[in-house]
Length: 107
Image (cartoon, rainbow, N blue to C red; front, side):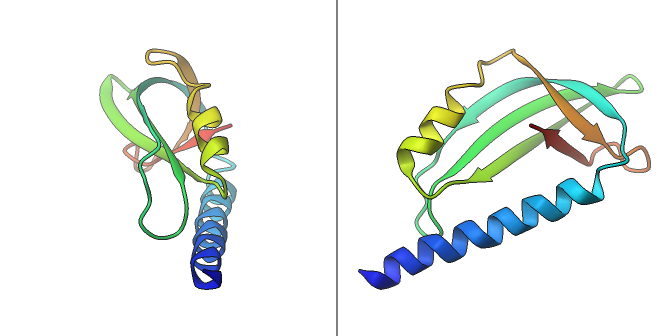
């Protein structure tokens, strides 16, 4: 049982660090608007629960899509987080001008 808890904790920490690094790397990218296209909180086999928010955006007349993944320690927390995002709602993103298919969700 302790192994399972460690698995969830390690998965959470790794996902959180990756998200933090991506956020730092995108700090100087311009902010653009996107639209929520999907929301899920799939059951994770390893690493704990993860919220997934799919989104679309237009940059220089071209359509792109991306997804935002956020790790949680508790299943109830991930469901509460996902419930905040309604399909079609507006969200903010940072878009890499050199590679507009690369974007980061702004919370």
